[in-house]
Length: 173
Image 1 (tube, rainbow, N blue to C red):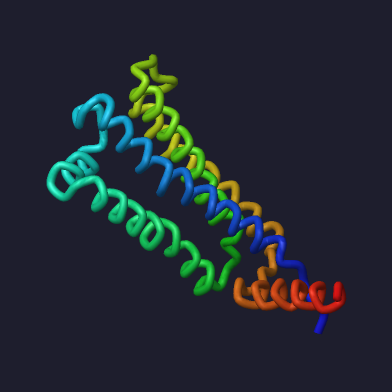
Image 2: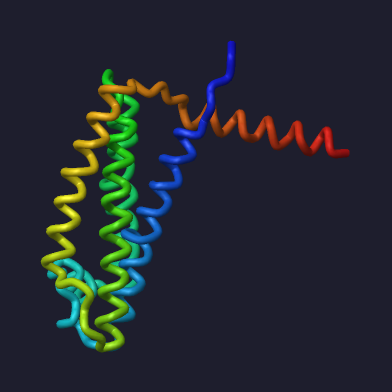
């Protein structure tokens, strides 16, 4: 059996990580910093305001990370695993949209905390986010239809990478 590359998995894993770091962690941390500097009314997200006001900052971070990782980011992986049609590039477009929105949210939070003029309004960021999800997933879906990518399982790629590392270590000595 010939080994096929895992670069698809590494690209998708990288996009997942970028989205998680910006949308999940970065937005939450900069949101709390902005609230510390400007007060609760500086936060435009009513759900975030409610959670922080009633349950505290640590609960907000935990809920944001759990919701982000489980609901928003792992469902596409389940969809990819169960889908009969390829959805690889569509999911990459999805993660790219969350990365862009997370980065913009972090920028706005930092600008608001510093009392600077905002690059974009929160409404514009939401519009860009929703538009990018539609555009990038549509482009990804079209690429999937045309290329029909063959993706190896993450577990197979993980085992292969471990085997290569161990072989390198053994041959190095």
